[in-house]
Amino acid sequence: NAGVTQTPKFRILKIGQSMTLQCAQDMNHNYMYWYRQDPGMGLKLIYYSVGAGITDKGEVPNGYNVSRSTTEDFPLRLELAAPSQTSVYFCASSYPPLAGGYTGELFFGEGSRLTVL
Amino acid sequence: GNSVTQMEGPVTLSEEAFLTINCTYTATGYPSLFWYVQYPGEGLQLLLKATKADDKGSNKGFEATYRKETTSFHLEKGSVQVSDSAVYFCAPQAGNMLTFGGGTRLMVKP
Image (cartoon, rainbow over all chains, first blue to last red; front, side):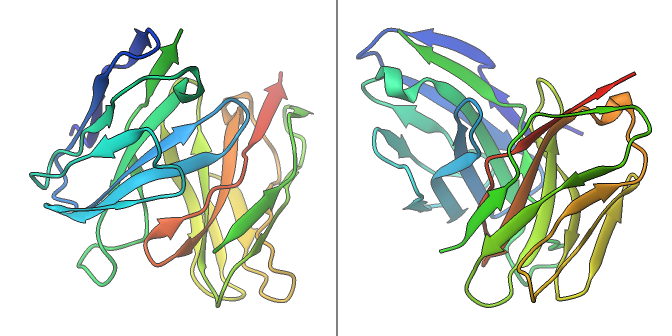
């Protein structure tokens, strides 16, 4: 019962490098999200997707890009890493409102800790 | 949009003590309200929720009541355990979007 799987769990980048954080879910959820969590802070929404082929910006999208080619996968790309992007990144998924099984609950991955030096 | 104010932590309690973590929110309309918990090294998981005024959500001995008049959703537990040590997040929901508070770290000592 995998749920939401994120890779890698840890990564250190140099300033200006690029990388992709992978996220996959096996619950057939339409909605997927990327959040970042800075130390002592709440979660901030970076991007979200309501289905394959559809993405939209959240609260803090600058410096990131996403794609959603399949229902299962929602990768997050950092093009030019900056120290301000040092954070823990969480991917989450949920059913859409009005769908069978909808409870409003978001299902989270275990997080990816990124350090930019 | 929605906003959330949670009491700042850390909250340090002895085992079997009573717990209250305050949460107030501002929102348009009457959002569903959630408490999520994050155990060390893990992602967030749903603890409890309430979907309308005066509803009480409960799970694992934790409770929270949706107070429309005071726009609050305070988390309580009568007797905490060491295993309850975690970070707790209050989150009102608008559509399918959650707005998370800053989190309150709870530390329970034996």
